[in-house]
Amino acid sequence: MKYKNFIANKWVDALSGQYVKVIDPSTGQPYAEIARSSAADIDAAVQAAQGASVGAWGKMAPAARSRLLLRLSQALLDQQETLAQIESRDTGKPIKQARSDAAAVARYFEFYAGAVDKLHGTTIPYPHDYTVLTVREPHGVTGHIIPWNYPLQIFGRSVGAALATGNACVVKPAEDACLSILKVAEIAVEVGLPEGTLNICTGLGSEAGAALSAHPGIAHISFTGSPQTGKQVAQAAADHFAPVTLELGGKSPQIVFSDADIDAAVPVLLNAIIQNAGQTCSAGSRLLVQRAIYTDLMGRLAEQFKATRTGAAADDPDCGPLINARQLERVKAFLQEADEAGISVVAQGQLDINAPKGGYYQPPVLLGDVPPSHRLAQEEIFGPVLAAIPFDTEEEALSIANSTPFGLVAGVWTQDGARQLRFARKVRSGQVFINNYGAGGGVELPFGGTGQSGYGREKGFEALYGFTVLKTIAIKH
Ligand code: NAD
Image 1 (cartoon, rainbow, N blue to C red):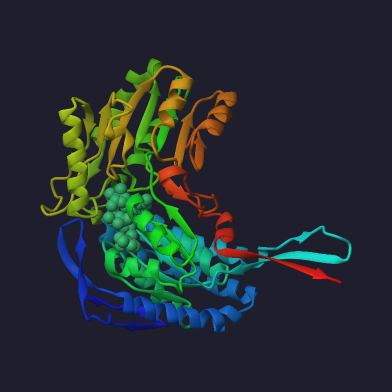
Image 2 (cartoon, rainbow, N blue to C red; image 1 turned 90 degrees about the vertical axis):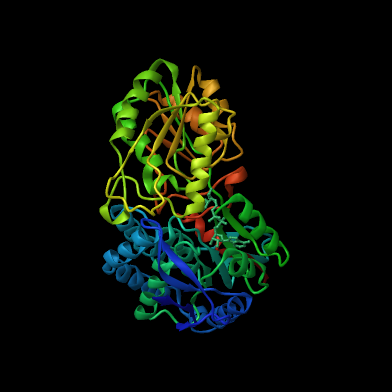
């Protein structure tokens, strides 16, 4: 099967005529091809979007735009199973997780459809012979560079908010997983999205992604992926003064104090690192445990790790394969380093005997007593590897939690109300969960990081501010 680009509501070949192979992570075998776009394809997509931005889409009344996006949301929900099947095969995520991602993309469009006609401006007190008001206007054409870990969800959160605010979009999904996004485009045409409103060019990051970041017609870029690539995107965008939202992952800590409800915590701690095989920007990948309960908690968690089953996405295991051979090598290299440093493997999950031989499997690993300054406790592994670190006092926990260059999500487990708030205010993190953890969840909740986790906020109502430009109008009577 060969997949083409989607420009101006038409399926078109990349101008190069070339394709990139799509690999099934569960088997390591190619099963489809996607168009390999170059700067010329991106340019065609930007021109189509510019046409929509000043044409039918740009002129559409907010209420009509809202109704159209609601129709799209319902159509996505109607196709939930189809989208989930595509996403599961393409990313290797267990089918149950893919179903929840497919429901989430519909929910993003529902949420943002509801917000379209509620984004009000303000009036500002000024000398008596003036009336001053602010209005929020779309950027025009927005660019969206999407990673392979949650194609549907990340498409929903950024394109949903951008369309709701009246922008026309050019999307560059990841070469490793983009088929579900192409399916969304097909559904968008069926519900009547005007030509040029949504354009998708597939291909390699160094070609299509770089061309999108550098295109002067792109007025805003939303990027999710690695810090290294995020920096390149921001530098390219700076050349034409386009603002950028960067969501770059993390090394998110979960801090468990000795008064925590351990029964409630254990399944959440496990899920936060095995969800999507640990390939989640907000994975809870560092576990800080107060020493008084360290042995008990680690014992219970070890049982849970050992009971996990890793296997092919279609078999709906607890943990699917990693996305590609490079990612598997990267995770294995981290584990090798742990071994060389004498860091102990407290527990490891089981690999399903039926898991196809060529798949990129790494069963979940629980590492104990990891020195807080070690690479394993500092860098994003992007695999199902949890680094546990004991601590004694609240001050020490805070200092360890804030010791990485990241700051995306934190989880704090304690019954002490004062400590909950004290810690939440001091931990360097874009989101803090108390006595729960929401890796990847919460359409309504503003999300984004500090430091190497990036800047700008997506999700929730907050995202609508990022996808608009505030204009102040001062009228002298
Ligand atoms: P990446 O950052 O290179 O890729 C993310 C997206 O950026 C993809 O769509 C890719 O095609 C595009 N891209 C790549 N090079 C580009 C360029 N020069 N200009 C513009 N766009 C470009 O990530 P990766 O190589 O797939 O993964 C490497 C590491 O990144 C992972 O091990 C993980 O640590 C991290 N990562 C984080 C997230 C996240 O959600 N925060 C997602 C994916 C990967």
